[in-house]
Length: 142
Image (tube, rainbow, N blue to C red; front, side, top):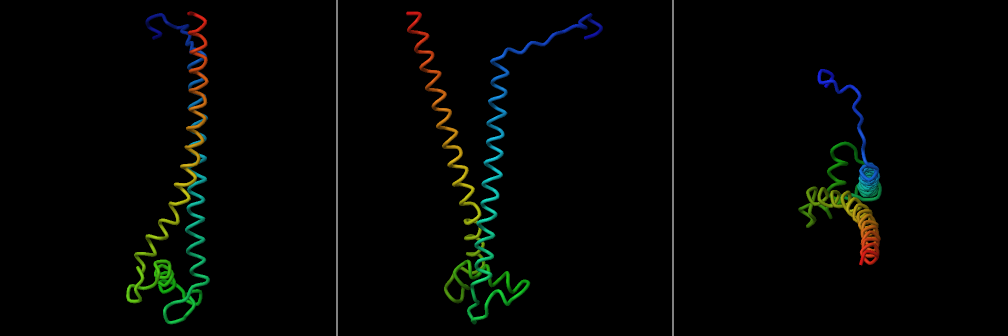
C-alpha cells in the first residue's frame, strides 16, 4: 500500500456496526457465564450424589462403603448408585455410571434452558420494540 501512495488511509466504521459488535460481545459473555455456571452445578450435583452414597450406603453384606477404600469403595459406590449389584437385581456399576451422568447433566440442561429462555424473551422484546418503531415510522410517511 505504501508503494501506491496510500499512506494516510482512514478507516471509518459506522456507529450501528460498532453497536452490533458490542451486542455480540455481551451475548458471548452471557453464554460463557451460563456454560461455567451450568458446568459447576453439574459437577457439584454428581459430587453430592457420589459422596452421599459413599458416606451413607452399605454393601449387600452390610459393610459400610465408607469403611472400604480404593477400587472396592469405587465399585461398591457405583453399584449402590445403580440400585445394587446385578446379582441383587439392580443395574450394577453400569447403572450407577448412567445415573451419575444424568445427575451431572440435569443441572446443565436446566440452567442452560432457563438462561436461553430468558435470552429469547429479551430478544423477542427487542424485536417487538423495533417492529413498533418501524410501524410508527411507516405511519408517519403514509
